[in-house]
Amino acid sequence: MKKIFLLLMMTAVVLTGCKKNETPQADQATGEVEFNITNIMDEGSRVEIPNIPDCDLEAVADYAVVAITDGTDPIPGSPFTMAISDIGDLMTDVLKLAPGTYYVTSFEVFTSDDVKIWAAPLEGSFYADFMNIPLNVEFTVVAYQKAGVEVEVLCYDETVADEFGFTWFDIDKVVLKDVCLFGDICLTQFPGVDNWTDYGYSGEFDMPALFQVELYKNGTLLATYSNFEVVNDVIVPNDPLEALCIQYPDALEVDGEEFDLVLSVLQPDGNGGFALHEWYTFEWTDDAQQDGNLNFGDDNVIDFYIGDCFNDATPPDYAWPESCPPCFTQGYEINTDGWYDQNNGWYGIVTQTASGTDGITSSEGSWHAIFEEDTDSAPYTSFCGNLDTWTGNWFAQTDVYLDINWTDGEGFDYSVAASRQDGTHLRDFIWHVGYVDGYGLLVNASNNTDAIFNSYKLLNENGGNYYTITSSGWYTLKTVFTDVGDVLTVNLELYDASGTLLLTNTRSNPADLISTVVGGSRYGWFTFISVDGGIALDETILDRPCE
Image 1 (cartoon, one colour):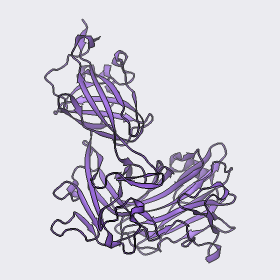
Image 2 (image 1 turned 90 degrees about the vertical axis):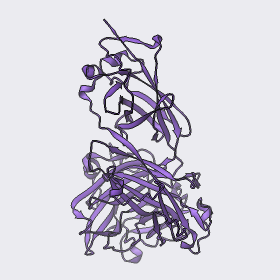
Image 3 (image 1 turned 60 degrees about the vertical axis):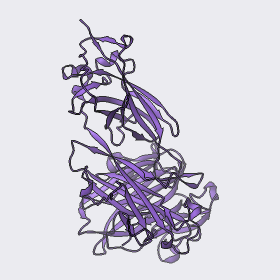
Image 4 (image 1 turned 90 degrees about the horizontal axis):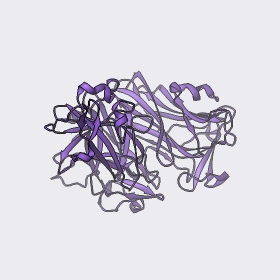
């Protein structure tokens, strides 16, 4: 005799949010997804399926485990564990997602005792053929718009695991946890600066800080958030009077996960403009937030001040009295200082170039620079000098114009190197960019350069994890140096002009110990440039914490 199963419907509502990619670059927003779980009791919604288990009407849904992919890979943090509340309707808590197309590949509901009571049959399983809306369910998140998603689930017990397809599918439980931040800037810390309002600030004596945070898990960048956006090259605060809250994924069945939250504040760059400056890295392990250096105070918000204009009766959780702009910044608006070429004792040529020359509009401002090699090498910079002290996580980045019309053999290698604590050279971290016939314009990375074009490195380094440039334009090469468990870990991150992360290659050597070996920055060096007419650079920055 056929049994009757109870059909449940989940409706996901997408709301707008404030998560960003690398800023300041482009205007992007996030959405918020919550699942509304409706128990459909009327006879018209009942369906006959062979061997389906009876529903346990006494069971109380406590949380859902939801697996989501981008169509190829699981998105960061997936599968997500989402608490369920009963406020008339059963609803999960909120999940923030960036705009894009996603797929629900698994949906399971559990009691507080971790007993699975409902589930959506997996794609290809026996029960999937009986669903009106079988997995995988496609949905789209559009910025500033709402979207709805329906997912069907059946009542479940272990005797029918094969029919649900669970014998070949395993899920780790992941909980999203919150960290909130709020900051202030004291105008007195930046004497002589009067153009704050040009960059989204109020210009008051004590004003809310505009900032971004980068979330890392075990050394891998998961997401970047900020409390402002860039609209038509104008910085627009989201709501600086409100704390910026982010979520991090804690896998409940995995111990020892390490989290880092890198705080960068938008502030004067010492060159007439403003730039994001890295101030601090918050560190913690798993859900033991207080085991790291997080301090929430009494309001569960990380409060920080840059300057000393706070009330002594209610001091912030963190106060940094010194202003500390990026130690190296060159936008090529005035000159090309800081780079060495044929004109000051090195090799190659750096030429300040007006925006629009040869059809290239500067990445920022009215000028950029053209870099060319000579018969010996190509331009070099020592950034802030040869630094033998690790002062905290730091990064070097530059914008470069990449042209898909380059021909086979045209490209360049660009190294950012670190020093040892004794002042000697430690290691190079090298970008490989070049055009390979049959493949196109590729980007990859390694720790060595041949100082000539090498298609093998482009195609095979990092297990062949290269990126293919399909559109000419400005891209950002960002080399991020981080302390992960006392070992130097370097992420070479490629971004497009909108701030979208396109590629990450991670390089690490267990011998590079932060405590005893690794110093600071050493140089940036184009070991060769084989592009006819050179390459265009703009907005070159090295940013590190104050000593």
